[in-house]
Length: 514
Image (cartoon, rainbow, N blue to C red; front, top):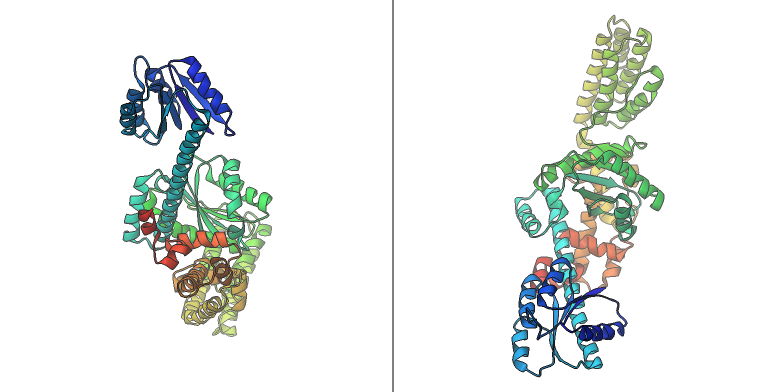
């Protein structure tokens, strides 16, 4: 709705203009003032889109009002009315950006044309402002994503310049929340959930899509319970979209320059979803919340340790074994035989996974373990076995390059498939999704989701530059079911739109030309 201020010392004249406005199909918020001084007071406390002002008024005439109003609001539309056919007034008024000069008595049809013209000016200016804001926001996201993944000083300089020009959330961010979903959720639902989520949580946030299965949320509040907030968002996605998401929440950050390091930590933290599928929120820096207080509660941790051993996941094996070791070094209420049984079982599994294991040597170590008189000696024997297993596994790391190569080749040849999930790719090489993700990141420097996106975007760019295929067709050919999501992703990845890419322009250049 447009807000219009009518300024005229004659009430009858103001009523006449109001009458003409009410004949229009558009609805207006109408304000009034008897003279220029009163009008300035109204302008100081209200946003006004269109100012209609008489020229001859007491205290402050129309031209004086226009001059001061223009200093306050440079984009306000101003129309002057006068009963005098004096073009001197008209020329003076034009100096201050008056869009029209209408003679009294006002002709209704001419008034309607003038009103339509000024409303078109406002709409055109607003559309241009929104377009520039969208272009700038795309650039912010493009440089922000590159900053997260590379930490480039050049990128940081460009991002800093953009953040200094406006009150963007990344420049005021206090917390980061990395979210993982499945089945391309962020490709199919992105256009729908952001507005609904803002209404649900009633908080300011900045949304950055990373790929079809991962997105980043940036928040500005310092004293919010972010675990509770993440749980709320999880329930929102689950109930509204039947999507079971996982969340990695950072500790408070010191500024946007620290984001790459924090983001890398969130990526690593989010890998826990493969090992703890029943837990959906992972907090950076949070102490382990689970305690093992009885033999019955050991079973889940033992199962996890067995999983770690089978998949040669040394990082999580050391972490999970450490939990069990800490418990039994401190607590004394368990029977000696039970403790020896628990840890001898772990040692047996470790040696069974070692290709060069010696059954006689294992038998001797088990026998030695059962002859221990102190629990610390039992734990030391098994700890040595875990270290030996780690050394053996590291010697086989070159073998895993073959698995990573197999996965990369599959992605290169099947990038158009929509279901390129970690689970599917891990099954190809008989590894767990979590372990594949870990060795893939270690050997390529990129997560699986990031690598898939890079391959798809590279192919899309190649098709845009070398073919005349429609953008929607290219989107489908590189694995996107939603062409509008493809366009946004392309823009955030390369820093320019698919259309600009075909023309050889970056968004920075397009922004400068607009």
